[in-house]
Image (cartoon, rainbow, N blue to C red; front, side, top):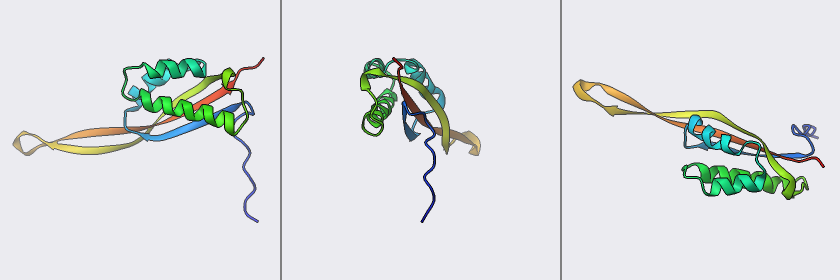
Length: 124
């Protein structure tokens, strides 16, 4: 019984990895994601390894996870993978406050974001 399996949302030559609730703003995360869009997987991992951005390590983990998903779950060739999509979305925002002069309060927003990496195998 139960539900039927949902059709696969990606093509046969694609795999993806999603990281949710990264503790950085979507704008800052998108700067790092823009540097790897369209690059080969090996080149993207190399550039993220030597990036000075704090969040680059988490993006690197997402790319490694997408490559591992492609290799283990979908039997794709690792050497022919490239970053087809690197999309960033907005998640929750923690709102904190800081006391200011004369009894007022100042809000501090602590944004979170989502990251989706899609790797695709190049055609021959």
